[in-house]
Image 1: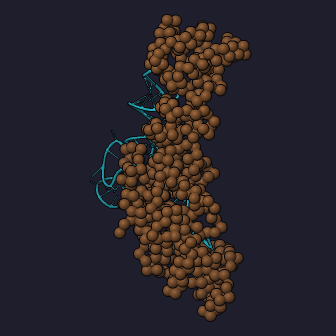
Image 2: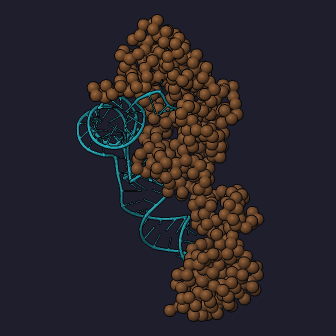
Image 3: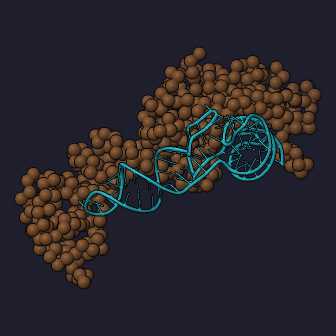
Amino acid sequence: MSVRVRFAPSPTGFLHIGGLRTALYNFLFARHHGGSFILRIEDTDQERTVPGAVDNIIETLRWVGLEFDEGPHIGGPYGPYIQSQRLELYRQQAQLLLERGAAYHAFDTPEELERMRERQRRAGIAPKYDRFSMRNSFTLPAEEVQRLLAEGMPAVIRLAVPLDREVRFTDIIRGEITVHSRDIDDQVLLKSDGFPTYHLANVVDDHFMHITHVIRGEEWIPSTPKHILLYEAFGWEPPQFAHLPLLLNPDRTKLSKRHGDVAVEDFRRQGYFPEALLNFVALLGWNPTADRELFTLEELIAHFELSKVNRAAAIVDRRKLDWMNAQYLRQLPLERLARDLEPILRQMGYPEYPPEYLMRVIALLRERVDRLPEIATFGDYMFVPPRQYDWDYFRAHWRPELPQWLEEAVELLQTTEPFHAAVLQERFRQFVAERGQPLRAIVHPLRLILTGKSVGAGIFETMEVLGKRECIQRLRHFLQELLPAHLEQSPPA
RNA sequence: GGCGCAUUCGUCUAGCGGUUAGGACACCGCCCUCUCAAGGCGGAAACGGGGGUUCGACUCCCCCAUGCGCUACCA
């Protein structure tokens, strides 16, 4: 039987990094086994459903490159793939359970349930639906139940959990897990608004969609026994289960917005590469070889093994993501990077440049930043003349002869041909040698004048990319406007 | 409180009875060098505690501690 897995988010907000990893592991597993990767939307809670969340999740997954085989946006043989469109099916299945005595009606109001829990809290016992003291098919005469239902009294359908037995299942990642049925609540299956709860919808859909492996977060372990009981009641073969360890904040708490960015689109906005994000997230809880860190999606697919996924929760370390993204920045083809950089520059209001120029700038600066947008901030001077200058840097390398040298440097630049880094370096080396100075005597002032900053790529390489015309222009402007003004304001000591 | 899951450097991890406990990020030092990076070399840094099993435990079992999750007509 071919593998079929699903990613089943509830549309309550943005896809966060934990959800991304769950989706990725499902995807890797499916692709590794040549199976199907299915998207199913679990919108059975009317209250919490956020408009637009489905499109947002799909778009985000599309951005990272995880393609589904079936889903609400592409269809498939077992749709619809949105649970709110399958209500009749759940209702029928709940009815079936009722007929088999595996489920029952209950009429308790929220207030009555709250009072029950309060009593249990005071008595110091575990809060759990008390089948024998509440208003339901166990405590009410059959005619009464029929009458209430006929009258349209709000009712739910609950799972009749067996009283005394062990419920067990084998988790691919964790091994055998056993829970006693007395610790399992008589879970609501069908709510009074006619919607199913997660538990019912999940089991019914996984069955009818022929899901073979349920790969989901660790927070579902406690409810898996309920699901097992449901499969038994229906007489269905349960799928295999694999519960993934949680992703944590640096303070070991469950991943949350409070501790910084967790939404995938936050990372996207900050200019992280989808490849890097996927690579990073893949290694949180699993690793293919332990002797390297960088893997393509294809390699991840080839190596992926569910049983080798770690059991312990992992902390998301932004610094490693930054490092990894930087690795991609240095390896990705310049054509691609230039294409990605173009809209960023446009958004920042810089003039348009041909892709060839962008590629040269990226090649020049990519080793000095972690993310592509930083090329535009760190290297702003490659797109527009410096707007501010690090005068402390300038002063540190000041000497009285400097203005004269710079005047002569204009001439030197004009006569340099070809305008290449190596040629420039050689000519400036001679230039300073003739004056009995080290190269740095001219390098630092030039850097300040051309870039405004004290840090950056090799200055001769920078000059080459900037071009003769631009270099001379900046140098002249500096000599004629900036330097006199600066000297007047703060004369050198 | 009850139930469940987990526990190797600060972090991500390798290890699957016998290893100087390996790699990566971050950190520190040195080298390279026109600055900053990148890169190279080196360093510091871990098996939560206690019992067993065994000739021998990071590896297997039990207990404890700690952390986390669940405990809804939420998923």
